[in-house]
Length: 123
Image (cartoon, rainbow, N blue to C red; front, top):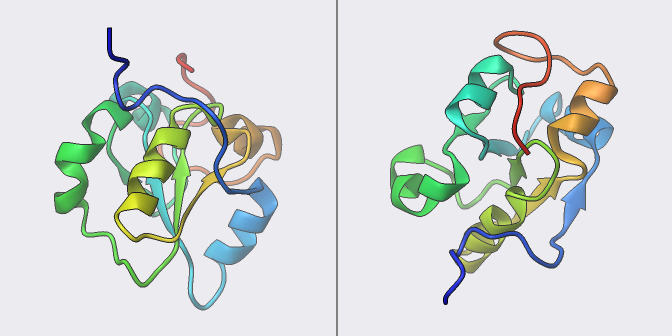
């Protein structure tokens, strides 16, 4: 049986929550791509983030309008679903990393959210 492409395994380059927050305030902010479910997204996400659940990423990627000349930070709840997202993006020539420990780290540090405050269920 073949595993779905979006199953998490291994490791990818990462950025921590405070470094991402600092870069988002900079002159050339990275693009943030949230790959959590729709319900998780609605419960709260990083301001300015784009959204595509990881299971739909390959089909929705062309419509997201990501700029290959700007870095991308993939985000999920706990830094598991973002692993395959980073792999897909890097295979397409994007400079992509994941948010270390995902939104759990963002929430723990009390960093700003758009949408409702606080974590949603899921992993």
